[in-house]
Image 1: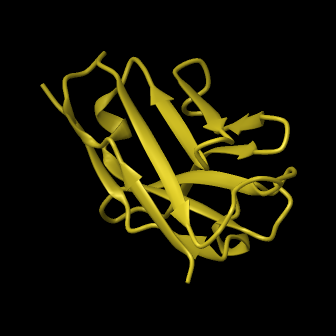
Image 2: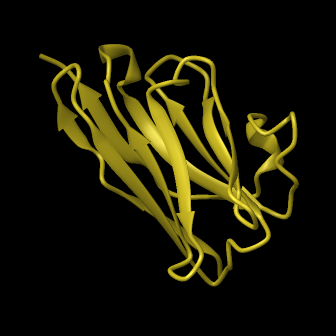
Length: 126
């Protein structure tokens, strides 16, 4: 059974930083595409970032470019989302997702991902 678990969420003031982690059990990220998505109340799920785990190439959503970075540790079967200069509009539940897909230009299409974590809450507020 595939299980993804996110961690690292919390509350932070604007301009602050958080690092989210995602680990998988029953599944290896190596060779896969892993994405981070977020969803705020009343809004659609939005692709934040994705990584081609094999070689580390990353994709970033326009709203987070220059502030967020995604990385992976193949030895630990984990991926990370480093979030800097956080803004109130970054407040959302953040989800890790993966599946037998190629990242590519459609990396931010949520329906392409077959496995999802339960999410971790990020709140940015003063």
